[in-house]
Length: 425
Ligand code: NAD
Image 1 (cartoon, helix red, strand yellow):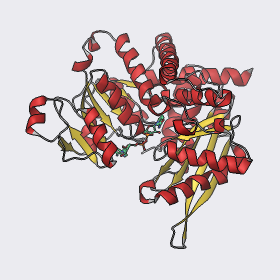
Image 2: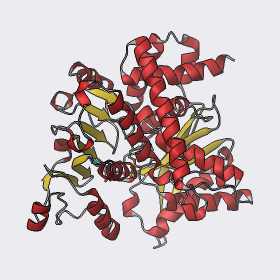
Image 3: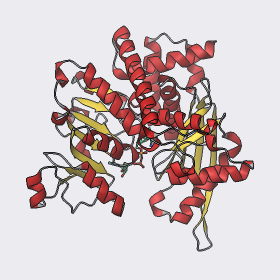
Image 4: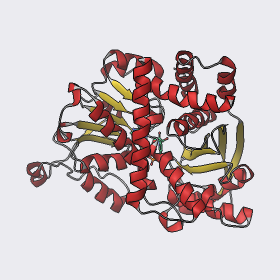
């Protein structure tokens, strides 16, 4: 199977061919501008030290300072970080932001660290990259396995190193420590806006009420849980959710508010509770059906939302997918070969660089507020994200019509064209 980076390159090459992007421009964008590789030491408390491999990849700053999250995950590797950094360049371009693309990671299982070790790791990461980041250079944010708390430690460490506080050097901070209202839900909210516009834009296939729209969501972290909540509040029927421990299915719909309230208490999705929306099932206390993660992907739903990790829908399972639309909230969940099969089956795949762009749009607004020392209310932040995402969606619709291509190719053509135009000016 091709790697995530190879898959990303295939998408870019295909879009570049259609849009007649000059070969020399494409060649410049093929390799990242810089790759920082290092080790982050963490003390175990018992006097011994463990070193974890870490990276920061800066792909392109043609449109503005590098921008991208930091991932703490046991399978993180350089190939993945390079792919994610490149996706950020296309995403920020497509969203019309004055940012380039970057990504960072540490190969570590954060769940196996104590709070003290997690703090050491977060601070250690900043000590490894600080001369190369900053509000006008490279602005990190959270991704898988990192959170506002991690970012707060990073902001604090950066302030110690540069000798003054620099809130605009990071986004995804907690609101208490200078973050933006609405940033935590920004990715999920942006995905909801794209889906709303997509459903409005469709012909007969989707002339149904939200409540009749059945949704399955893979991953219940920042992105998955927030989009689940927003869809649930907007009357969609979320029939399946999952995390790394497996999936839950409920034919008549899952009460996402209840799942979230329980998760808040224990930190996990407790499989022993009843989450059915049906009052009858609720009275009977019936539990959701447990499925394997793979099974969630092939459920007969209207909308499938991968919101966990890359390479989830491949040639191995693409033929079994029964959803009508796939909204890629994770980065890189569908491989190029799988997408071909899905398109042949008439399934719309709304690509990551469009669907999950709300996160970086929210980050952009946080960066603006941090620079200006202002704070907007959540309504204002979400209104601005809505506006940007709607505009990006409409832009992609126009390109799709012009070139008669898939959602992904249209998104890449839009993103690539802008970066190349700027390079040529
Ligand atoms: P997170 O760490 O908060 O959550 C990840 C979730 O996926 C967890 O619930 C985990 O249990 C689950 N998971 C892991 N492996 C799984 C599997 N095999 N099956 C089902 N669930 C599994 O991470 P996140 O920030 O929500 O990021 C999720 C995806 O969205 C990533 O691809 C990330 O790059 C992308 N993304 C995140 C943001 C953001 O703002 N956080 C923005 C854009 C894109």
